[in-house]
Length: 127
Length: 140
Image (tube, rainbow over all chains, first blue to last red; front, side, top):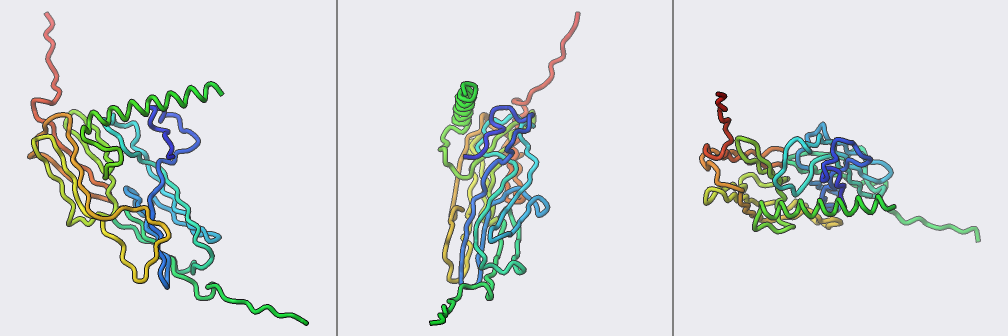
């Protein structure tokens, strides 16, 4: 459930969580890469932070909410900050991650690392 | 404890009221209708805004009918990758169309639509006779 912080006209008092929504994502894998597509309408490249750490990809968007500046006649979605985390594991070549934003869709390519692909380890015994 | 319960009930009541308002404004609306829209108004007109990330702009259509019905349609394309396997698939694809009725007839010759950063904004100017106007108060 997303935060309802602005629904009850309490927007003036900043509450603990200002997260407005959870962006929808696709995660696709093929032989060479992982691809993540996230619907992040309204943000520009400066409003979005993409971080990859310990096998986890974090997308953090910062938006000035237009909340409460206008009287909505109908309101089906809200505008504001969002965060989405996806665990992709250590298979990713972190130096080659590429992120691209177009028409409100963030596309991130996470190429697989040759060196970190799983491999079978020979177990030796002294006996 | 009690105050928390009360506040939950309050917010649910307000949420229901909001839903009621939305149902009145968007008569034929379904809850899960796509795209989700926000509607607001000022003295000059109505503003309908929809989050439509990744739309093929060639397919985007904005049509007015009967003076007050706004239809937004378009196509969302599927990402293409060879040998793809989906781990998550939350973003919808394909054709969509949604019609909403505005609270009153608007000036259909003065409709403006703009698509930027995946957000479609449509401005629909109020008819002259529907705009608020100041009435001079004569003081004797």
